[in-house]
Length: 395
Image (cartoon, rainbow, N blue to C red; front, side, top):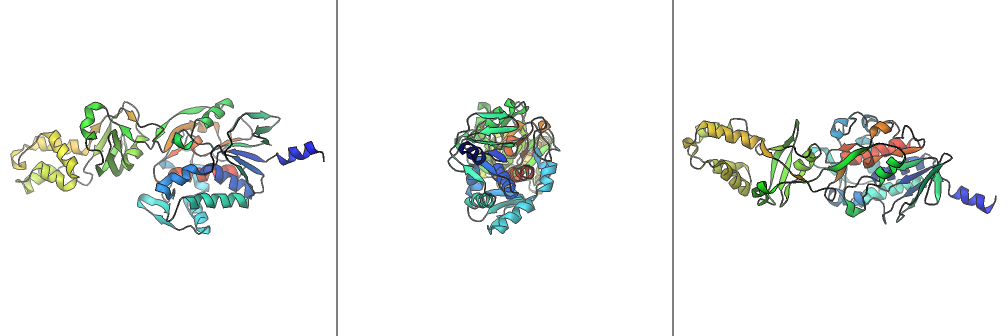
């Protein structure tokens, strides 16, 4: 064999995967262990950087309540196939096979007992078992497609997987590269926007900014969707799990509503007037809410004095306001603070079974690059594992 021939053989792969995040590593491991020759490229100095910072460094690696209705997409049915074939239990079995200790937190969230580095190490071990070639610190230059092969870096393959994620958390190196590449190959992109992100409030609601650091259990609603978790007041607006969740459903110009007392019935104040006529609204709110918040809400109502001296009509108005306090955010804290991206490569362009592009042979898209976005709490990692597994089965 000539020297030129050996160069071609050495640099020919069955698949090239762009992106060493959760989806890319999973896809590479699955394909490699099926006997495929896989090259994985990542521009960062090490793979799995978003995994390492997730869950406060302990990686909320999946959620046992994973179901397709906990994902947002222009096609709400798209995620069903991959999620149904590679489940949270499947990934948990992999974690346990690697003897990684884990625990369940609230709402089905699973975390490492130790460090997120254990998940990255596990994925690298799985890639090594499949003899995957990993190159980091590689800025991906020209990508050519001719004669049924994709040429990237100095390798070529009949299959190319876009696993470079979305533009959320740019300080980690995230960009819109996946969308640019998809458009280059003629794939439509659903307009991306920040998701799982704090909301900002305009100056006329600045009085709540003065509560920065105060957190309380609420139900946050946007339209017909609601989440019960903690909300946190910040110097810029609203954050905390309930707000991050509802941000995925919020659209600019729309209000959100906060139920500050989710455990109280609709007539709790008028009931309290009968049972405790000598008490005050301030005292009642102070029994249920953080002191600073109770003080501020009481000021807003302008209802001083004992309940016995307050008309039922005014108390009923207060009940309604406290169960659906309106806020009109003027924006979000953007991709810099967003945990994930809503939108991305249109699911109409992809097979839900294989994650392959319908019109471009050998091209695949997985993970956050695709227009599938999960709730907070491990759902987006499960989509990464499931979509990566689905594509890895086909390479």
